[in-house]
Image (cartoon, rainbow, N blue to C red; front, side, top):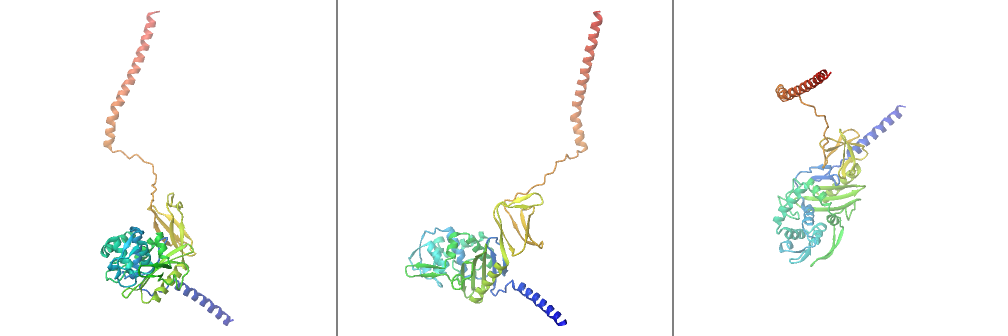
Length: 392
């Protein structure tokens, strides 16, 4: 009997230990120097490690260059390649000086094959020089919401002042993915390339898109210089959920990819994105508020939520444990005012005296007029009686 009890206790202990182990293992250990997981639809951060520390991004810079070029340039423009673009170091698409290339094709070479020469050609075409391009690019990404970003060039080759953060890169990618042309190029796995001196097929450098495909990955960009280590940005969709993973300062390519896969598994396995459709009524202390657009928020899988709006237009979302999961400031919020009856304020003695001064003369005149009318009627009645007496 004692042995049976011991076995039962031991099995229960092992079961609880396993549950604890699984729970602790849900948050992965990340070896890269910085990382972030962003829900693309809600904009909520699902995981972060040193996400606001400034790091060297290497070729992840090209995500910003690409969306800037798409939105500010004419994709059908013909770009003439300069000597400076031809001679840039690092990964190239082997442009020749004087070669004329459509802007759209340069952006494809920039993102798919990480062409540094394409980046310089784009910068010079759009803004005349790399220096002016960097200045304009910094202003552009600041409007997206970046706070730690200072770009010095369009390609990410090392410059000690060329820095950004995992958070900023995730925000830039989130913004860029709203653009259909960017999504197309960002997600391209291979592309026939017909250049003046180079005819080939370009293949994406991102291994989770090609060599070791990961279920749901829709786009990505790799980066590496000695000073930055291995950098990686990855976009993925699964079961209605879209996420962005950024890893910076990886000691090896293996670390960067393993960290990215671990974070993808963590996000898809533990969270879901919930849609609150436009026109949804949300209860308030007074009345209700109807959403003026589709609103997304992230929540743990399997957790029921409740929602309410406060008087300042902030949507608060609580889990089934009544803890606040997230809060969202909604635009176009019209605060409902409490309707209260207006009561007459008490008058001061001076105000009452003034009122008497105004009312008293009118009252006396009315009284005198009334007495006068009564007197006239009595007088007429007396006169009629006298007239009848004289005539008898």
